Amino acid sequence: MIRRRIDDYGFLSDCHTAALVDRHGSVDWWCPSRFDAASVFGRLLDPDAGHWSLHPRDPFESTRRYVGASLVITTTFVTDDGEVEVTDALALEPGARGHDLGRQAPHTLLRRIQGRRGTVMMTTELAPRMEYGLTAPHLTEEGDGLVARAGPVTLTLSGDVALRRDGATARATFPVAAGETIELRLAATPSFGAEDVEARQVPEIDDTLAAWTSWSDLHQAYRGRHREQVLRSSLVLQGLTYKPSGAVVAAATTSLPEAIGGPLNFDYRFAWLRDLSLTIRSLWIAACPDEADELFRWIAQSAGQLDGERVQVMYGVAGERDLTEHALDHLAGFHGSRPVLVGNDAWDQSQLDVLGEVLDAAHQLRDQLGELDEPTQNLLVALANRAAATWREPDAGMWEARDAQRHYTSSKVLCWVALDRAIQLAPRLGPGADPDGWSRARQRVGDAVLAKAWSDQAGAYTGAFGSDQLDASVLLLPLVGFLPASDPRMWATIQAVERELGDIGLVRRWPQDPMGFLICTYWLSECLALAGETERAEAWFDRATACANDLGLLAEEADPDRLELLGNFPQAFSHVGLINAAWRLTETAGPPPPSHTDTDTDRDTDRDTDHDEEHGHG
Image (cartoon, rainbow, N blue to C red; front, side, top):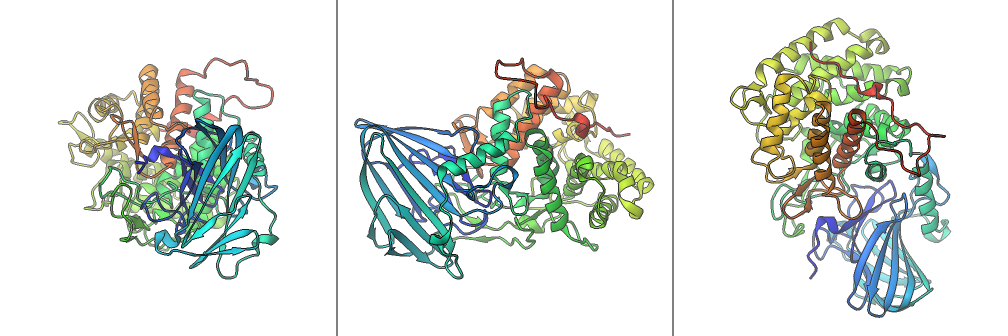
């Protein structure tokens, strides 16, 4: 039995959902139709929850790569008898190009086998298990294909290889000679009211590759440091976008553990407001304003009218509010890491930082959004008023504590951000704007943070008022413009975080956190860059980025001793952190020397820095 690691997986996307394929050619995660739909392949979370393997019959070595600027993966298998390539993709709508990519997805998994040298015996095993492994399907031969039916999903396999049925599993072994190409397609449709698969235009890998390339060609403006990693991260963010709404999910998976065998396993297949302003900044830097604009407009529509209720912190990809959590007790979990959860009860928490995230996002996009419509004006005014009225209240904080509410420093600072950005947006917010009242509230919030978040014992700003415990979330203070990195107390805080939370080679969230949290490591890089410590900033950036797997993908956390990724995967927040830190290094240390392939004839060399003003408390 192969012990799979999280970083063994590659990420496929059709901008509706994702599939994960490992380096041995097994698709172990696929939730057709939506990121948060039930899986038909779930071996990621239980050996018996479904998979589709495809690899040489005999011992092999494998390498893999993304094909150009795409989310199409080619894996090269080498045996004693020869060499084959397997190319995997989640199909995009035939003919879709540029910003239309992902609007309509055919929900089809494409696999192409090409013989390169000699003759290689290949073996494949198709074992779909619907509804997170609860249901084994009926397999029937229909026409030239194989159909798997169970519950709400029907899978239809077509292509150049006939599989033998064995209960709810189908298998085949077949030769692939040099120069030979074999195509396989697995289409998912609803079991009831389904469209006719045969009537649809057949999706192709080459067309899907052309679609990704066309999108990438429109998103090449970034010319700063670490350009290759930034552009790859922008593709990952696009792949984590549910294109029909513009929502960006936090990750493609549920319940991948923060520690192997541990209980901290959560469903991240939803969109968090907490991530909003940092995600929009990264999309602005590495993609273009269109994606950032779509994401903000989705938030404005999903939030609806607040009507005195608290602001919800997260939504489903189509704006769903009720994300009630429940355990899938029949699943063993990733290497025994239980529980396996669907839904996320953080949806019902109070997290005051979301007020600042949304208003900061609106401020960043103020020119792109143009004249605000009345519902958006009302939403932003309500958020600012909420910050003024509730900033004194405790909350669950950005780390979503489930034990007790506290007066988290980062939540207070994001309330300050909400008021600060609302003041600047006031001329666009209509008759409900109250810049004078917001200004008074901003002063009160700022004074409270400076007085109550500082700990003489820690010699730093700490994670909560009255606490002596360091918390990496305070690195946000200079990043959102509350204090400059050069402020003596802020600089002492940055150094304390680096010394005490960065002691394992990556930055932990708090002293008891056993693993490195990747976005916190990128935040430290940004703070050091703002303080003029560019060499140290680059070193921390490199440490975090070195945790990426061979395809450039990051999870939420990493074990720096074992060089193993942990947590849900791929993680949007980590790739957001990479993009923003690379841009910050470019802004403070300057762009890299031009290479022989760079030109300045048709694209901007950097992004408009007006969207990252430091305002400062005062």
